[in-house]
Amino acid sequence: MAPDKRSLHLRLQEYCDCYMETDPRKELDLISKEGTPSDVTGDPEEVALKFLSLAILYGIKESAKSFSVVRTGGKINLNIEGAGKYRLPPPSPALADQLFGVMRSITHLELGKGTEPFSLGIRNDRLELGVEFDSTDGKEILTLSFPEI
Image (cartoon, rainbow, N blue to C red; front, side):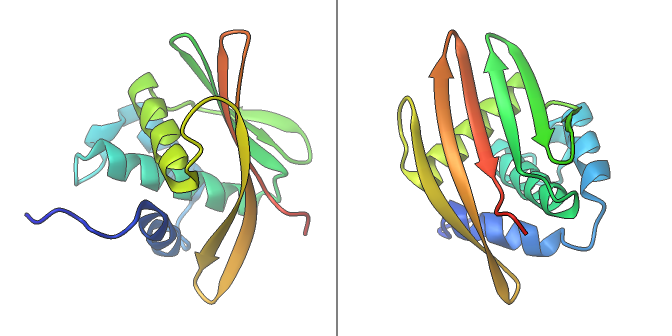
């Protein structure tokens, strides 16, 4: 199989388009429970892109303000802030590593703290997100912020 030469950003957009009509919560639960083996590709990077797209779609569906992946040592939390604050089943530590890596690669925020605007094309429209990385007190946090609608 030839290596995929499309950018991570484009592939993330394609996953958003592909999963637009699904139940993102159900899919997120499956990935969180089964990890990389839940995907036909078995590729950790592809599963991370799929997870991110589903989390973004879930955030849109729930009118969320943001979602955050919080890593403290080996413990991972997935937090959604919308009308209230709640948690979804977290990704595995290995998948969280991939999530951080994919978003750092897309935004070019390679180390430490940083913020970057992020435009995501979805079908015939686009979504302007904010991406933030933070590292404090042994916590590493990836936050995607949604625009107010």
